[in-house]
Amino acid sequence: MIYVVIVYLWASICLYLLLGGADFGAGIVELAVPRRYKPRVRVIMAHAIGPIWEANHMWLIIAIVILFVGFPQVYTTMSIFVHIPLVAMLLGIIARGTAFVFRNYDAVDDGWQRIYARVFMWSSMVTPFFLGIIAASTVSRTINPQAGDFVTAYIGSWLTWFGISIGLFTTAICGYLAATYAIGTVDASLRQLLIRIAKRFIYLVVVSGAFVFVAAIYSDIPLFEWIFGGLIGQLAIALATVSLAITFIAFRRKKVTALRMLAGFQVVMILLAATYQHYPELVLFSDGKGLSLLEHAGDVKTINALGWALLSGSVFILPFLFYLMRVFGNRQK
Image (cartoon, rainbow, N blue to C red; front, side, top):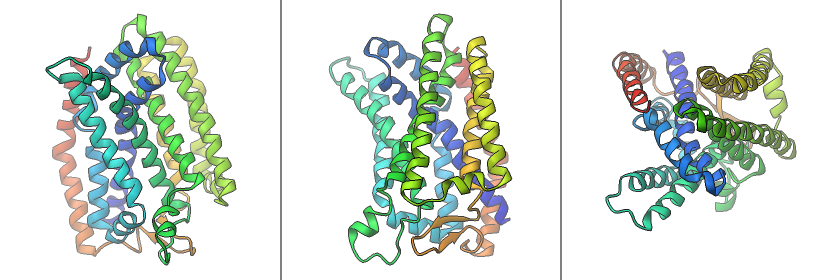
């Protein structure tokens, strides 16, 4: 049952990046476009995130619950040593959600809408940036359980060039997902605009991805070996690269469904390549030790109960979730 729990943990993180990331990307796209396009893009993105707005953070909650219940030592370690970026990320989630609601549904149309818009856009960029930093801190061997001062323990554990590069890479991916997902929600007159935006984010993803490898070399992190040191990583990157080339063909032919599937597939392949090599270790410490999903799991009875709860919950929740997304998706057409 431990493997069932691990699969659900990985899947929930993956789905949060695919759906919640596209949600964050809505504000990133709006922030990135020229001023003359902002009003139109604002409406487009508000419609595009409608199908996932109601449930996107469910995946984050599932991941947190799995860690809290099934892997308490991992949960405790992360909560202590990276609590600053965790709090920043949570504040970003709260700020953007609140700003989105007041910006779109405030009964009085006054100058506050501009403030809400700025809060929404900037918090949409800050939140995935810190999400990437948190992810980087788990594998960069910067967490020092024996640290004797505040800076080393709670700042140096996450504020690194590698963490910043992963934060920028995650932000670029979110913008790419949002722009690509939104292409199918607009008419032909606006579709070309979103295609141009999506292509620009592809270039940002490539550039920020290169920065990740440069930062890894500077930080003495064997990222190249992790990703290309095994067949799975090589295959995942090869498939992501080929699918990226196919994406440009789909852009030219305006194949909306294919574009969405290709964007999601690329992100899944990137996540697979980045995580499989050091499995089952989830957190790597500066002293060479780490926390393993197999060796540091909770009690067997707890894992079994958690696994059955996840399986049974999926039977009842997932069909209704897909129905909810379909209903909201139809309302945007």
